[in-house]
Image 1: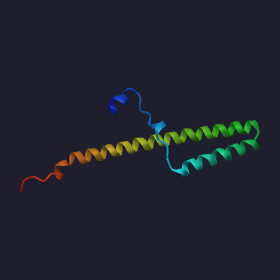
Image 2: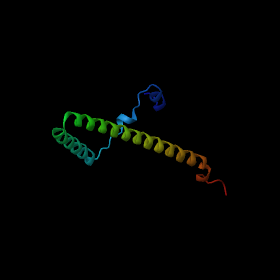
Image 3: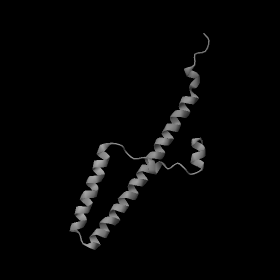
Image 4: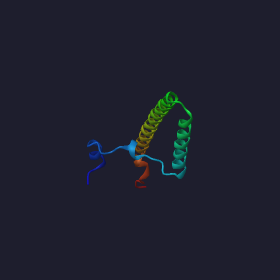
Length: 97
């Protein structure tokens, strides 16, 4: 079995594709968005539908950028916590009294 670092180097780790909320509310919300979008498209002209699609694409790109920034912040915070813990590991071991 390869290590995480080997898998990362080989390009086999895709956090952006694997991070999906598992809550039922997430699925329901996405279904509601899809249904509402389809109903709206039925009422719009072809040009308006294209504008709506362009807007949704922009929103998707913005959300992806936000998710990437949140992932990187969380990763850096976690690494900083580990560094702090390891730097203070002497405090966890009682030396002879």
